[in-house]
Structure formats: C-alpha cells, structure tokens
Length: 222
Ligand SMILES: O=C(O)CCC(=O)C(=O)O
Ligand SMILES: [Fe+2]
Picture 1 (cartoon, helix red, strand yellow):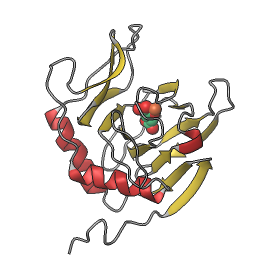
Picture 2 (cartoon, rainbow, N blue to C red):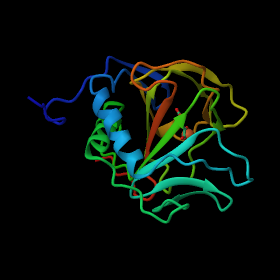
Picture 3 (spheres, helix red, strand yellow):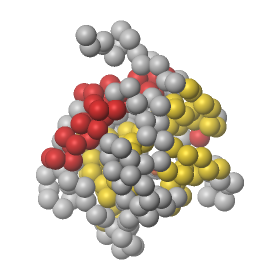
Picture 4 (spheres, helix red, strand yellow):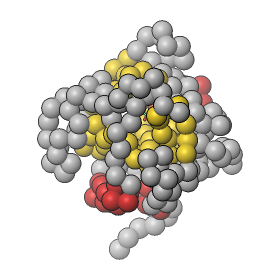
C-alpha cells in the first residue's frame, strides 16, 4: 500500500535548529531514497549535467542540471534563471511530482507552509568539487525558503551569517539530509568544502544536491 504523502506525512528522524529560521531534517529523504534517486536519474536522462563557468569565466567544479519551470544557470552572461538550457535552447523537464511533494512537505515540516518551488537545481559533486561561500540571491521573492537535499557522499557544509565576513560554522550533511532555510537567515552565506574521496553504496563516488527554490513566484505562507 502506498500511503498518500498528505495523509501520512513522513516524519524526520530528527529536526535540528541550525539558526534562526534554518532547520536540518536529518535523514528526511532516507525512507524513500530509491524514489529520490530514480527521480534525479529521470531528470538527468532528459537534461544531462553540464559544466558551467562563473560570469568571470572561472570553470565551476560542480556540474548542474535543473527541472521545473526555470533553471539556475551561469555563464559569461551572468548568474540567472532561464526557462531553457542555454547550451541547447531546450526547456528544462517538468519537476517530477514526487520531488515537488517532498520539497513542499519538508518546507512545511520546517515551519514554511505553502511552499511552491518552480526550480529544482541538481548539483553533482565528484571528489574535489566544492562551492564557495555565497548567498542564493537571484530569486525575486526572498521571503520564500530554500529546501536543499543531500544524496550520496557526505559533505562538510559551511554555514555563515548575513555578511560575507560573518563567522562560519561547519557541519556534515549526510545522504538523506534536508536543510531548509528561510526567514531571518534566508540570505545567509553558505558553501560546501571540497568533497572527500569515497564511494556511496547507492551513488558511488559522488554527491547530489537538490536545491528547490521559488525563482519567479511569490511566497504566500497560507
Ligand atoms: O550543495 C549544497 O549543499 C549547496 C548548494 C548550493 O548552495 C547552491 O546550489 O546554491
Ligand atoms: Fe546556495
């Protein structure tokens, strides 16, 4: 029997406060890990991971794809959201219902009801790949939280504050963890330290991160 997500919401193993408005749902995605992985594979079969450069031309170590109405892209034209893959002009695939429903439920579990993501950015880290400290700032409505899912190899995540110079804390994100941040810390700096070598039993030598966002829609909590 398949329980409806809304009749029987999955319970996080542990909900840890990271900061004001930021929650770590430890192991949230574990129970349905095979559906998560299948959904990502489905997206990547339609839109393979692409290498990209920062606007200044520096290659990024993380490879990316997207699903949803928009995708986050970067190249010489800048950081932005685009309805299509800029390499091919092809629209991103629709966000699988499973991914959307899970992101909505995770946001609600972290105190953000009414989440309606229009973007799911897929990041792939191979050993050595990293993401420098940054804020997610290309969205129109900064009231909407970010829902960020970790699959595969563990990583050391950096959590800073509202200023680039704010102190940075580090913690480990494991396969199945979901980090949700919004409210007072929606614009917090964050990043990922270089991925260590390893082999995950399901995903091998890689980490996937799914970052759900509301790029063009307005967040209405009720
Ligand atoms: O990989 C992660 O956990 C974070 C990714 C991220 O911050 C981003 O894509 O903006
Ligand atoms: Fe980010």
